[in-house]
Image 1 (cartoon, rainbow, N blue to C red):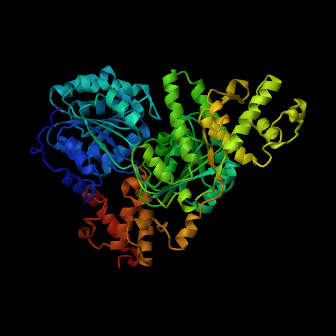
Image 2 (cartoon, rainbow, N blue to C red; image 1 turned 90 degrees about the horizontal axis):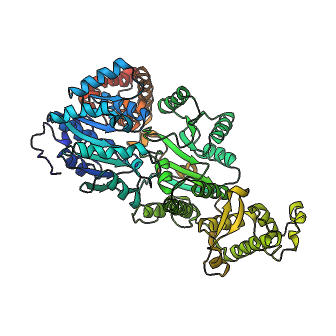
Image 3 (cartoon, helix red, strand yellow; image 1 turned 135 degrees about the horizontal axis):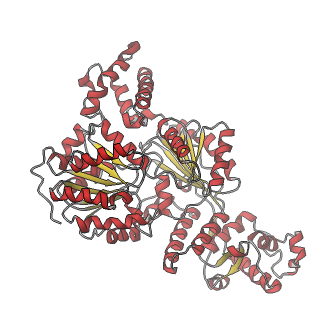
Length: 633
């Protein structure tokens, strides 16, 4: 579609950025995206979590509404996200609303009436609602009067079967373009590889859209992966050593595991809460609200939790089970450190994780083409986990971005020793072959490793496997080493796990090349060693200081007192308005206020994050807080 002229706009995007949101300048590709969409262009935006995606459609929505072009409809998949986004817009003085199941009939009628009158700047709704005949009828009326300003499709990866969070209802959104071809659209996601990106373009008919791909790098996040031994104990050690008293998210694969880990953390004195789809909706909402509104809460969850969570001060994201693919891993780890301060992505994984993920793919009802793509994505994640070089380089390369070693991941900080596992791999495969040949049945990994290492267990004796020719030939290999070899063999398809027969090992067509020595198997010596303590590095003056005030200049004693008083005030305001504290002001804004020690409203102008509405609403209160007990100088 042709871009509409922007000369008629009542305010420039830069003015809206400053006056409404309180920011002096755009970041990265934001400016180009905002101007393109404001002028009426379609766009596909890939921007990492915390990169400022929301402003890319909110500012065009405000600009186009002020120019008389009507309402922007934001397609959003989660009720919690809608609530917080609308709350934040209200705080900034923007007329926004949502339509979802939390509203009663009267409230729904009121919002629909305002929508019909184009009396709202932004309206948030789920894809299921947007495509209903009732909602489309409302849009038809707006379109007929030229009062449909923009469609913003958030979390656009949900439209793709190759994406990590596919939602079939997103597929229907193509009708927006078919039905309203003159209305510009912006699709946004934090995570999409080339295959997913192409699928988004096709499914949403964005072939003519401008594509804006920002760097996927999140330099403030440290990536670390350890070999799973006693995952809960390892997690406890990680939190107590690195992140005591800080907010974090722990991801587990099953609901049962979520409950167990949350209970273990609570028993260790950590303020932890469970979250999964099996909990009552009211309980889930209560736990999510506590996580968003309180400090130092650790959420233990399945992947049902997290999309659209804007909490800026999450200091760590931990995985106790391997995700399905790099997109899911990147999306989930990206929920750490949205405020730009140091954060960590920590994962423990082991052989059983690989077995489980492979089994889920093999047993999925999809066609073989789908399974092959999913296996490739899992292999890429496994390669990241087993990598001996910079993890950030590998992670970014997956998304098509070249970079240099970061010096901030576990492999960069403590380069692992590497060993040649080819001989061990051949002996493992030979053992699987000979055992099956002798017994006529298959056995699991533990039994195969016992034979190779020469352990005459009761089971080995029962089946006479001490007479297998490979018995004891791998005595020099440790069990962790052999498990690492098995992970690699499963990942490259050189060995299969039969889930229907108690996870027994079976040879595949890919086994032959490894047995012949044509495929080398190289592994890291160990991935279980801890990385240097973040806190010890900070104590030596390395890295950023952990204090929230690091977002601004360092604060002296008086500044720290002001900062603490401002946080207390903010918590009270947030509670009174039923909003997360960061919706009122981010920590960085409070730190800047504390440093400036304002004595007048004029002193507050120009501080990042204080727009006109917030200055009018909270300026006097902020000055009063700073003035109490002589804190303003």
